[in-house]
Image (cartoon, rainbow, N blue to C red; front, top):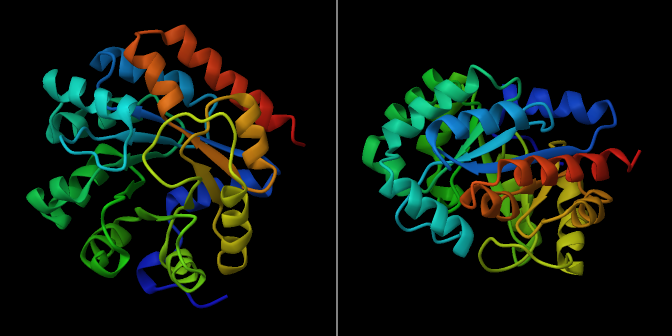
Amino acid sequence: MGARPPAARATELEERLQSARSGGRKLFVPYLTAGLPTPQRFVDLIAELSGIADAIEVGVPFSDPVMDGPVIQAASTQALQSGISIERSFELIRNARRYAEVPLVAMTYYNPVHALGAEHFAESLRQAGASGMIVPDLPFEESAELREALAPRGMALVQLIAPTTSLERAAMLARGSSGFIYAVSRLGVTGEQEALSSAAMGLVVRIRPHTRLPVLLGVGISSGASASAAARLADGVIVGSALVKRVLADDAAGVSALAREIRRALDQLH
């Protein structure tokens, strides 16, 4: 296992997840889009999920979310049409953090970061109370400015690793990540799927020797059964589209029911 870059030292997010993992808990990171279904209900959902999750990923709406499938694309569009700008997203994260007892991780694309500047974006997120970022379209080789803006503020920059990533590159990304490793379960965009591919499980096995960080599988996890299958090898799961679909239907009870189903399935692995 190689040395980690200076900008990838332990963060609040990593410490919280490592602490939960060391207690034998499988990790659950749900995803919500900022401001949906309404700003107040978004904050309410964050508060409720914080009693179930280990961290929560908050999507900052963007007009061209290339990694995301139809559900999260629709959520981004609806949020933007409702006036959820980048600055409004910071306000919502700040409001939500007052009620969340777990770390909040902002997920966005590089264009908004570039538009505001890495230092401004990182400081705004810090003041909002976020613990890290996921920027799926930012290559690691071009991420130094953002990593150097986040690290002194104790914030993580999570790296994604896909099934097609070479072993050499996966090792580099694992060493350069902070917070956790986002193992992408399949090629293509986000969205629900019936079953995890063997490639997803093989990806976790390939990453494991190169990091001490928690390895979480995301993209396509949609039920307690698929979460349980993923967490037999991974340290936990990230669940987005299946929850956001219920958010778009303004089905708070459905969001809660699915989140609790996943939590129960993960807890049954011990």
